[in-house]
Length: 441
Image 1 (cartoon, one colour):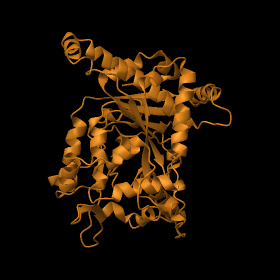
Image 2 (cartoon, rainbow, N blue to C red; image 1 turned 45 degrees about the horizontal axis):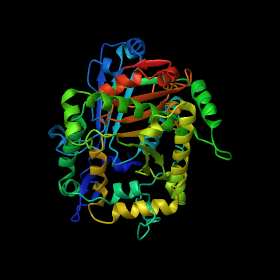
Image 3 (cartoon, rainbow, N blue to C red; image 1 turned 90 degrees about the horizontal axis):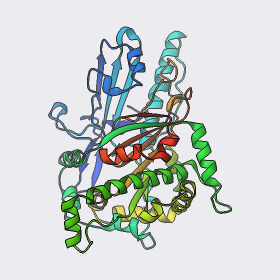
Image 4 (tube, rainbow, N blue to C red; image 1 turned 90 degrees about the vertical axis):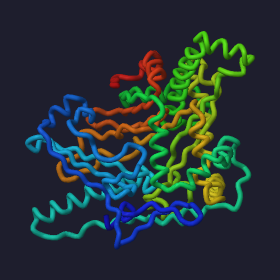
């Protein structure tokens, strides 16, 4: 906590309605820490495929949206940590829920890794009856790193990015005006207002490599796709097709057909799919301190795909065409691009809330967060690497998290949160299920 004081900060709003984190040494907002024991054996957890819903108690904290609670003084807590000890000391589960306003996935990973390193250092010092020097690590929370590349205007952004960042609405102004605690409750209500089903799919490393090779064969000369380009394109196609089928089935109902006819087919029209891919911008800001920055340096890069693009056959060639557009969009995120984005996000006191409405109003979207790059299985608290690392069930529909599986098994875990009808259509997609070797819902 001394090295990550931001986890003891309070989320505040200044006179201009701009949010900031205040760290007051005389009034620390410490994370919630819970320690639970139960009669469940670790082998029972293994047998369930590490399904956290099998636990006899709820894990503390909030999934996705941090909200305040009377039980914790009416404050939004920056982090929740829950230690779950299995019967006869047969195993342990560490659950961490961290507010995104404090750190991003990279920052959370750094915190857990450092916690584990300190734990090993303490055990080694006790066993050796000596106090060895704890290795030093450099972390920074200085948000002025962002200001170093902020431009004075935004002129060359693509239409989708500009619209998402520069559209001011009464809803976004109201969100910026209310307190952070009330805003958390609103976001929680929004996330709970839609039906969604959580499901997990496992794809082996060999299958992913084979897919990338087949798609690469259709790439233009001189273009090399990343694994993220390929899987993001593939997910765009299979989810887009599943959404389109759900959309068509909905408008086949008699009453909706009548409404569509009376509107002159203006209603019930096909909608483009917006795919947003999370990307770590630290390597792109030309600032050496950025690599040690543990706050938020993640940006969502959005690309619009028409239904014609999503419905193309054969699928490998279609994936290659979409992967090319994704590759080009990601490559366009240079210092100039980031400077324009940061300018729009800070142009007005409430600018940081402007994208909220654009995200909330559009139901035909997909968010892909690839966390396979994090070295989760190198985290060692002194008893070896973990058997399982999963992203906790989250609250946001139309989001997909990609996690690495245990190296002993290999491959990747895809966590989906989709409308139940869309999820049912996805499971019927032969192309997608042909990649999958394990499915759990």
